[in-house]
Image (tube, rainbow, N blue to C red; front, top):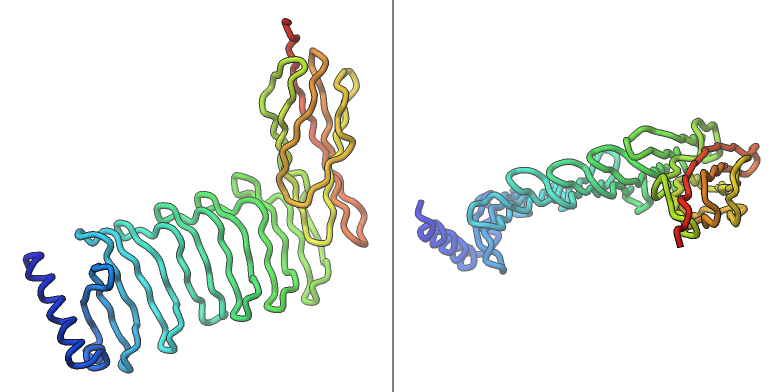
Length: 279
């Protein structure tokens, strides 16, 4: 059908709905119309006239659209934007069997970004971050009353590095893995009297304190290191002085101290060559 004729028929249908009453039109179960932004909408309805689902097209080619769906009680069960039939951006999906609202972020159809689910009582079921579909960083899982189920930490490749489990009462059950996830220096070399940027990534489970001790190793002339760095969030970037030329050896020791348990330690060595300042 010619675009003008199709548009005219949509407006005629919408006009008929206004003239005969919206409920009467909805009882036809399917309807096409233009919304207040003059976008084409195709909607399907339940027998009582409530919306079952709707496609709102964002371009003439209909390659970009917003899709929403509702259950018979009027609860939103799916909402997302699509480009060439591939989900893009935020998608909200309601899992009625568990009473969970999933809030997901997509890039070209792949989970990428914050990912969480919320119970009907608004307590978070789980929350974390995905990169290219993989879990990365910190993930926390909760029972419907807010008690912890598991604490998980994944590296940048999606490998689980630390896992902490809790029982049905929310009390600590067991743990596996080590707290020091990543030590990343800004380079292998630095000029004398400059500072070295170091990114430190650690697991920080609830009810635990994570700290990192930094010390120069034997044979290293490095001085002025901070005795200890405390963490309230998993990732921190610090600046270290490099006053002496030559190979500088540093030991990073993460300490995970949780109430009622022996501290867990994890060590990593970092070597940096400090080039002499020519001035």
